Length: 528
Image (cartoon, rainbow, N blue to C red; front, side):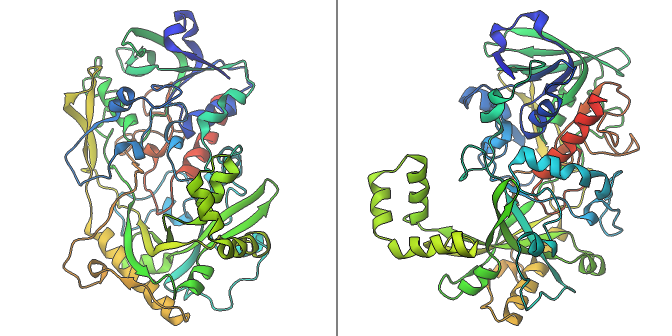
């Protein structure tokens, strides 16, 4: 794929069959899937090859709702590769129940089901550096890992085993897949990537039913126009809605917003530490609910074992989908970080001293990794029990346009993210069940924080997890959603949206695997 700066590109080169706005996991997956096809593909990326403070400032928001984690760069990066620049690499598909209509979750239900998405998960895995795309989050994990399931099972009335898989970069086995680093190595004469190209407006015909051109500026603010037969908006859960709303020169409410749905139903994952475990007495629990190394046809991959609420309990008690896991927090002198630096060729004198003074831990780790195929024994600062809970969609949790503007004159996204007591109740119930199950299984139970106790009057200590979702949700009815089941914007014949903003609900799983699976599906649709 050819990479150029907008300032060096002729106007005649800004014409394509498919134009993708955004080069994050969704945008680059579509471009990669279309590589070698007969389609002329143009990718427009607002950032460059390195993070630049003045470009990152274009991500500023006007937050008027619940507090969100700072800095925003943890979630949104204007750079080739987008959010894969800073993501943690943890992957899991949505559960089947996440796609279903649930009577106790208002506005739930996707117009497509798990069976529609499932065939694309393995193809998504190749883009994400995963060994498996699906079928590993529950009991089948033990078969894939070639292991015997634990003798003592969880009480399935309340909890089920759950596994996440960690992305692995092809060039650095200690890092997650960084999409931007691998673009230049993909041979495809039909795909061109333009960096430092910020789209400022989507121009439609007077009826608002067809996109005619894209207005964009280069790093110096010089205006340009791009034209394409089909356009894919892939700028993230906040920016997708913002750009649609800000494209209001023809339709005052914004592109695709005939029914005032763009920006509504904003979701995120609420996450936090619900308890702690003693590093000395929790070793057995950490072995059971820890990391496992599994060999696949593409190499060795790391999985994390946790637990999630059973679908039966969610239905019976009207709870949301929620998962919990043990998080080991390494000490500042954990020798395995020094080993990673050594293998990367960045060993410092301090790293060398750390390695030399911890031979026992390193030998134990070598055995666990190479023979036992489990996680490394870390030198720990402390051990936490963490949770991630979905949100119930609400139309008043939304993105609108602020009176404040960025340096290009585009209104900031005014984010009014709303929380629900149901999320707090779900987390408290889930934490109590995990503590009880640990005790029943013979493990020292976690010490739950005071706010987690079910009768506690204290507010929940949960924050967003930088997974903005749902602001251009999928639906069959344009009055309740922005895109149709093929991710095409309702009533616009050539505009599509990729990314988590199309999710009607977000489950408890990290969204990137589903984002990429839907991107692969959309690429097939565009190709055919």
